[in-house]
Amino acid sequence: MIPWWFYPVWRWSSHFSRGSLPAWARRQRQSIHGKVLNVGAGGDLGDSVGHALSIDIDPGRRPDIVADVSNLQGLFAANTFDAVFMLEVLEHVKNPRRAMAEVLRILKPGGMLLLSTPFIFEIHDAPADFWRFTRFGISELLREFEMVQIEPRNGYCKAMYTPLIRLMYSKFILDRFIGLTFTILSVPLYPMIVILDLIISSDYAVTGYHVKATKPMASS
Image (cartoon, rainbow, N blue to C red; front, side, top):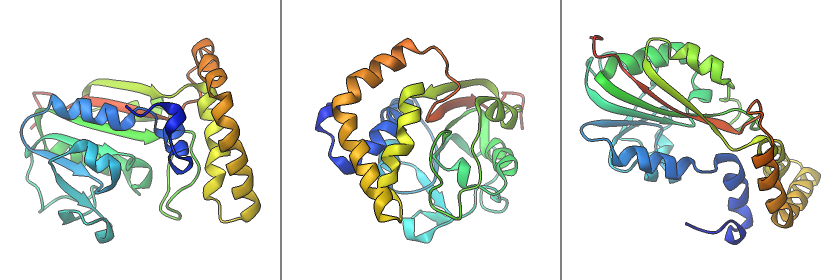
């Protein structure tokens, strides 16, 4: 694992916002066998999922199949997949409830959904960024699943600091300078940020959530 102080500047914001997400995805993948669907293609998260059939609405991301997760009728039959990965995608889906219904349909009984979504994070991939979900909203979306586990990603202080670093990606020059300044400052401040996250008990401000859920065995 790359030590925190060795991350290049352009990866530092990802370290703050996504934290352990790639490592979490790799751990989940190691325990899964059978047919796997990755909703969203390419990038380091796609690499974390490894060998899987991929779908994405953007052909530029080079998915195996160009498709919308909200409408998989006619593409995949019910009870097709042993697991579905959906990492940092849900906020971009126009109809998340329909998407979860489709994921539930195509999973085999006992199949697993591995999902992540940001919470405190800037608008990105505009204008196709529609939602932010609390843990309670995620629970509501997954009410037809069972054994739903929702794990917060990063602590309170890191979540508050992330938007300042993300200013580096603003279209405004002054914003970028401010973002770069806070990125540079985050290196000497990092030990304090970590300590504060250990001290602060509240999980009402996090950068996102990692979620595991299972399709009930009785489902068809």
